[in-house]
Image 1 (cartoon, rainbow, N blue to C red):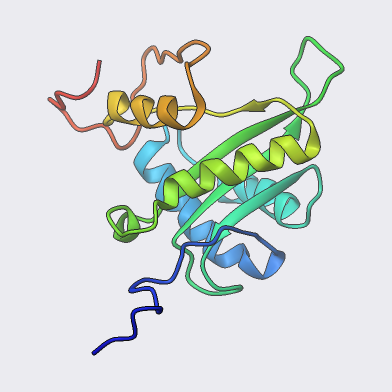
Image 2: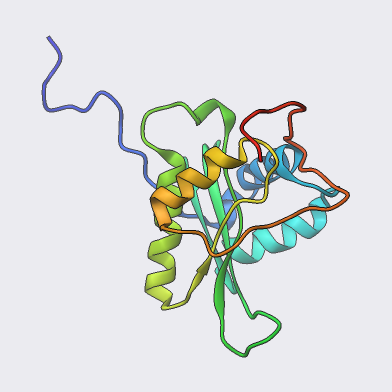
Amino acid sequence: MPDQNIPAHPPVVVRTGTVADVDGVMQLALMGSAENGFTTPSPQKMLRDVYEALSLDHGIMGVIGPPGGELEGAVLLRISWPWYTEERTLEERGIFVHPDHRDAKGGRFARLVEFSKMTALQLDLPLSIGVLSNHRTEAKVRTYRRLLGEPAGAFFLFNARTGGAVEGDKTDG
C-alpha cells in the first residue's frame, strides 16, 4: 500500500533560471517562435535577450526543470522603458510550456504567470503580459483573465498570422 503522505506527483516549482539553463531555454524559445511567432526568428537576437535575463541583467527568467537540464516551461521577463516615459516596467517577452507538459498536473502555465506577478511585486514594477496569438486565442485570454483580471486592451496583426494558427480554428475571433 502506498504511503498516504507522499504526493503522487512532485509539485511544480518555478525557479530563477541561470546561464546553465541557456540551452534548454533556447530550445523552448525556438519552439515557441515556431508556434506563436509572426516573423522569422533570429536565434542570435533571441540568445542576447535570453542570456541577459539569465544573467539577471535587466531581466529574469522563471524556468521549470532541473538546472542545466531539459526544461518544461519558461517565462522571459525584461525590465524596459516604454517610449513615452522614464519609468521602468516589467515586460513579459515570452511564456511557453513545452507541449509534452501542457496537460500534465501541476498547472505549469499558471505557475509561470504567478512567478511573473511575484517578480513584479518584488521589484515594485508594473507587469505587462498577454496574448499575441491566432491559435486558441479566446481560451488563452480566458486563462489570463482568471489569473490576472480584466485585460487592458488587445493586439491586432495586419498582413500576418502567428505561426501556430490553424486554418478554420473555431476558438479564434
